[in-house]
Every structure is written in C-alpha cells, then in structure tokens.
Length: 225
Image (cartoon, rainbow, N blue to C red):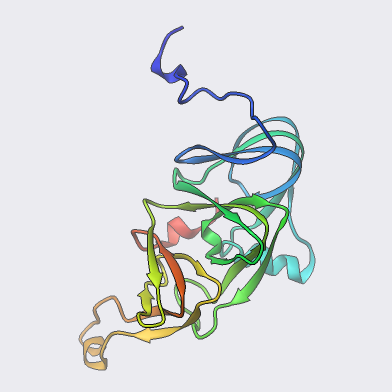
C-alpha cells in the first residue's frame, strides 16, 4: 500500500530513549519507564504495559484536580510503554526546566509533564476573581512540561521599565518571579455606555516573560473533555 500517509514524517518509529518528545506540532509522545503525569483525557493512543489512574486524593488533591486546568484533573501514567497526548488539535510545546527555573501556567494549558517536576496551586496575587481564574499552577524542579495552546502563542518580554497587561482569558503562563495585579483600562463612563469589552487585565511587572494565546478562551474551549 502506498500513500503519503505512510511517509517518514508521519510514521511512528521506536523511541530512542525514555521521556517526552514532540510527535508533531499537535501531539506529544512519551516513552514511559516508571511514572509520568498528564491532563486527564488527553491520551489519544498508547502501546505497552501502561496503567492510567486519576491523580490526587483528599482536599489537597481535589484542589489540584480542580485548579490544574480549572476543572481539568490530572492522571498518572505508570508502567513501560509509549503514549501519545493531545488536546483539541492545539499546538504543543515542550518546556525543559533546569535547577532554579519556575513557571506559572494556566492549568487549562497543561498537557503532560515529568514526575520529577513539582507543582502546586498558587493564588494569583492581586488578580481577584477574574475570568482567567484565581489560581494557577506553579511548576519547579527539573524535567519537562508539555503545554498546549490554541494557535501560535505570543511570548512578550516583561521588564521593570515596561509592565505588560494581558487579557485574563488569553494568558497561558508567565515567569514565576513576576509580580501580578489587576489593571483597569476602561473608564467609568465607558462602562456605563456598555463597555469596550476590555475592562480588566492581568498586570505583570518585573523581569521575565508572559505567554499569551492569540484568542480569548470561551467557556466551551475551557471545559474538560
């Protein structure tokens, strides 16, 4: 049988080493030898001896399940084999953490990560009950994290002299050392006249970067599958 469907760019070959790698722009391949963590429901295929279990128990686990993705719980994947992860054909990116690195990520953008990474739920200081959520996930340690983004992300440098303001429904993540707050860019008069649709943004100050998706999240897009 002949087809471009079976070209070397598409056909899966055996993994060279355990761990995470991009299969293509829309999916991540993970050669599991032990344990890894993933967004629940994000596995699209696997082979080998793998077990998938809901991650987290008790109040702390409930918080992590509820907030790591705002209703997108995690699962553990254990055993030996290969698994492929994706979410709604979003673009996938792998972030490699070195000692001292820390990244705050909106849980809805978490796809999968190494079990060597530590994560915790943090309240976004000064953000209040915004559309992007009161809590985000803080990742630290060493290892790899795969994030998913609808469309090509925009990465904006943040400097002490030039804070950045982002829509809370569009933010993907930011350098953990940045200070956060709310910024109101709409006058009271404009609000009384119906508003501009851009009333409040997340303000980021300091030295680092912020990652933004090229569209605002809708309720349907932000819900779990």
